[in-house]
Image 1 (cartoon, rainbow, N blue to C red):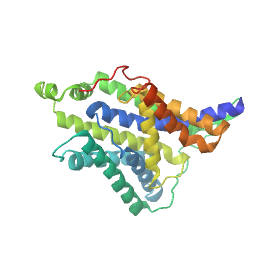
Image 2: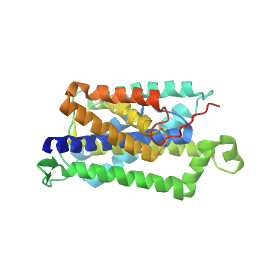
Image 3: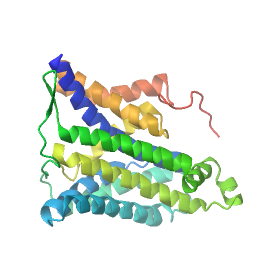
Image 4: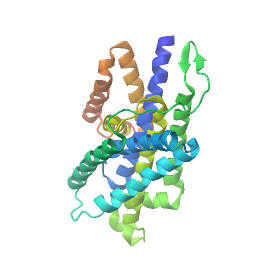
Length: 291
């Protein structure tokens, strides 16, 4: 039981991080029907940006957290304005190729700025681990779970309760209808990019105390987040949360009871299975239509 609980605790921590990354995919897809394959690099920028601000420039942690997220959101703003908005023929495949190119570009920038060495940061909290039937639950893990759940509730309230959030949802349903009702469609797209990249930065800053961070960390994290979003239902906030937790726990159990070599294979095997059995994901609509 102790061993099982320890694997579950580890899986919940990793799954929460995957869930935050999946939230970014779902926000952007829900508003634009676009999948940003550079999303993992925004996670990387958030993590290394926090380390630079906090450990390098000695800025207080709370301020460094806010600056790191805002800085990445600004990069997302520039990405949409300079790389996405300027496309003359914004077809889905063209935009996806642009995001792949942006991923390569940002990874190269990360290597030039931070080098090829891995970087780390100390734990945010110095509290002793909580003992649960012999298994240890770190304070950092609890904080990550709280942040993820709070972020999901906040985004849900934003899209369901605020006028701007409802406008974003309406714009995603019909561009023409949005213009007819006075909704600035292009600004809704821009806001979706900013929210998505800021969410990726949140994933980056919460991961810094529990793993080594490097310029190429975003590739695998982005793919795991995409798997989580597909598992839960791309475009669904609660699906992203559920998909991330399920993926993290299954990965941890597979690595613990089978072999650590199967950890990544489990994620992509699960993605293939969900695409074959239920392409819409756990919380997605059952019937898919092409227009």
